Length: 428
Image (cartoon, rainbow, N blue to C red; front, side):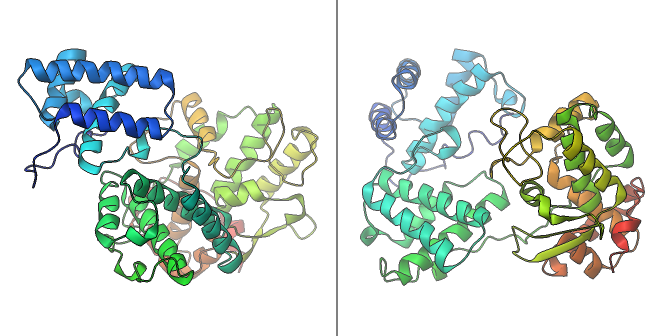
C-alpha cells in the first residue's frame, strides 16, 4: 500500500537557493548509492530509470527536478495516476514510485532514506563503527537497558551516524544542532511513535557522547519535543465473535497449531506482551500453585499471574504432544528446522495474519497483531469495572497512566466482548 503522502517530501515550495540541475542531482545520487554498496543489478535498474527521467525532463523543457515532474513522469511512462498513490499497487508500480521518491528525497535531504533499502552493514566508517560499539556497551553495562531498548537505541543512532557520513561529516567535531534538525526532518511521514522512538534514541546517544567527552555541548537538552501526547490513539480491540473465529481457525491437532493456540490464548487471556510470551521458560510455570511468574522484559519487574485452566491445558497439550525435542528451556520454539526460540525481531504478527485470513476476518486500518489481543483483555477488564490499579498489576504496567488509555475505548464496542476473565480478576 502506497502512502497517500508518497510525494509529500519531494519538494517544499520555493528554494532559498537554486536547486541542483537534474543531471548533477542524479550523478550525486549515483555516487551515494555506490557508497552504500548497492549491487550491480540494482544500479543497472536505477540508471535505466534515471535515463528515462532525464529524457522526459528534456522533452518537457525541465532542467531541475520537482514533485510535479516526478508525478508527470510516472503517469506518462507507467500509467500511474495521482489517485493511484492511495491504492494498492503491484510490486512493479511500487518500485517505479520508489525510484522517483528517492530522487526527491535526495534532493531535499542529500541522503537515501532507509525506508527504501536494505543493507547488510549500515555503518562502514571505522570511526562511527567504534562509536556504535561504545554506545552499545554503555547501554548494557552502564544503563542496564532491556535488549529491546538497546536494539532501538543502537540501531536508530546508527542511522543518524550514517546520515552524517552522507552529509560529509566524518566525526562529531562538526556536529551542529542544524544538522540534527535536518536529520529529524527526514522522518517526516513516519508515525508519531516512530518519530518519538528516534528522538528518544538520539537523546540517549547524545548523553553518552557528552559523558564520554566526545562532544562538549549538551545536545540532548536541545532536542525538540514531539508535539503530541503519548498514547493518544484508541487501542484496537477484538469482538467475541472475532476471537472465536480466530481461535477456531487454528488446527489444534497439529504441533504448530497447538503452539499457536497456546500463544494466542496467553495474549488474550493473560494479557502477556509478545516478547514475554517468546521468552517464557519451562521453570516459569508453577503447576502445583497454578501460577505463572517471570520477570518482564520491558519493565524488568517480576509479574505473577494465575494460570487459568484454559491456558494451562493448552500449554500442557503443546508440551506433551506438539513441542519438538530441542535443547532449550524456552517454552515456545519455531517449528521449522532449526528448532530454535523465536528471534527478538519476530513479533508473531504473522500468526495473527494467517489465522485472520483462514477465518475470513477482514483487516481493518488499525493493527490487529499480537498486541491488540493484550488491548482486548485490558479493555474487557475495564468494561467489567475492574479498578485501573488492578488492571495495571495484571498487565505489568508500572503505573496507571499507561492503563488509562483504555478508558478511551467505546463502552458499547466493549459490550460486544463479554469474555470471561474471572480467574484473572481474582488475583488480588
